Image (cartoon, rainbow, N blue to C red; front, side, top):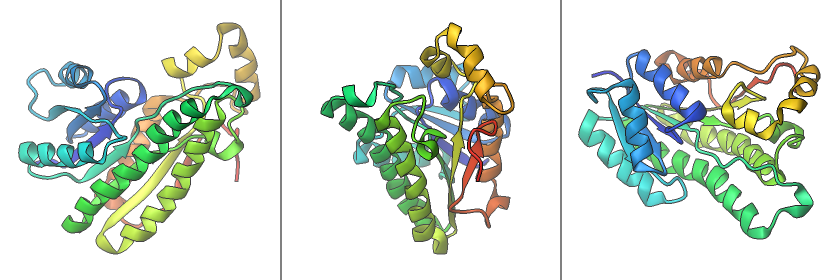
Length: 246
């Protein structure tokens, strides 16, 4: 049996691209998404026979959903080796206009969801003495979110810290935990936040003068998910066109 990966927020956007890249590389892939129908449709789009895909309803805010997902995945594929915490709520409300409920909604989805994934699936990985966790952070969590909401930026900065915490906690059990921090990528979600008339100014502000290729981000996930990546843990990998350098 090939290795098995679970991707959250998998029905569309970057999550769907990551799932496709994993599947093409021979992984069995569980598509976790808030909508079961959307998850199943995304899975069927790349694997109509469903031989190496599984669509799951997974609300990352609910610990019991992660527990149920592990049970369904192991029953279907016999195990689980890779978790990609991708699910996120992306809002760009100006900081002085963010209501408390909206702030909580973003933090609960993005930060709590990543925490629960790392904790619940990380516990399973530790029992298996092997696992790869890849968290999707963001440039917004490094530069203060110049083009995104304060709640989104804060959640992504928290994900970078959680990555270090869980990497340390799980390092003795054969489990690595890393993050990828993309800058603006050529995705519908990014273009939805940037009006067409503002795109030239955005590109001019990026040192390489182009949006990132999300397929490359998916390839980075593959590298970090590999058994060969055993000595890579606790790191945040930047993909931002030179917008943030360290």
